[in-house]
Length: 130
Length: 133
Image 1 (spheres, each protein chain N blue to C red):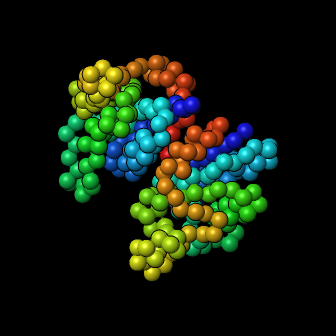
Image 2: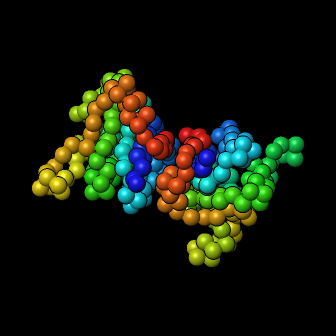
C-alpha cells in the first residue's frame, strides 16, 4: 500500500513525533511504500539539525535522516509553517537575508500543495498529532 | 478521479494555531479540484462564531476568511448539532456561509449543513482523505 504521513507536532514535546517514526519503520518492514512525510504545524521542528537531545535519549531528527537515507524517503517541511517558526534552509536564508539556517539534510522545504498531492496519490494519509 | 477530502476542525479558533493553519490548507487545497468538505466538531464550532473580536489578545481575526470559502468552491460545511448544543450555541450564533451556484443562475445557497453526530459519522465514513486539525 502507498502511505503518506502528516506530522503535526514537534519532537520530544509530543508522542506523535515518535509514533510517526515507529509507524514508518513498521510500514516499511511490512513492504509498504511511504509516498511522502509532510511536516506541518509544530511538526516542522522535527527538521532542525540544531537540536541537542541528551545523549541517553533518542535523536528524532537523526532517526528521520537515517530512514531517509536508507529508504529514500521524501521528507517535506511546509514552508509557511516553517517560516513562522524560524525553520529555514540555505536558499531561504539567502532570500530572506537571515544570518543562519537550520534545516537538516534529508528534508526539503515546499508548499502545502505537497500535502494535498500526497492525499491524492497515496492510498492512505495518516495524520499524527493535533 | 477526484477524491473526497474532508477537513475536520476540532479546536477553538484561538489558543492554538491549528484552526488558522487548517484554513491555510483548505485554501491551498481548493486549487486541486477535489471534492472538498469541512466538518466542525467539538470546540471547533467556535471557529465559525459571529462577531469575533481579537483586539484584546493581539492576534489577527481570521474569521472573515470563512465567508470566502464559497468563492473557493468549498460549499459543504458540516456542523455537528450536538457540539453546538453542548456549548449552548445555535446556528444563529454562527456566520451565515453561502455559495453561488453557477448551474442555477448563480442562486445563493447555504453552505452549512447541520447534522447529528450519527449522521456525521456516516459522512466521515464516506471520505477518502480525512485531515484533522
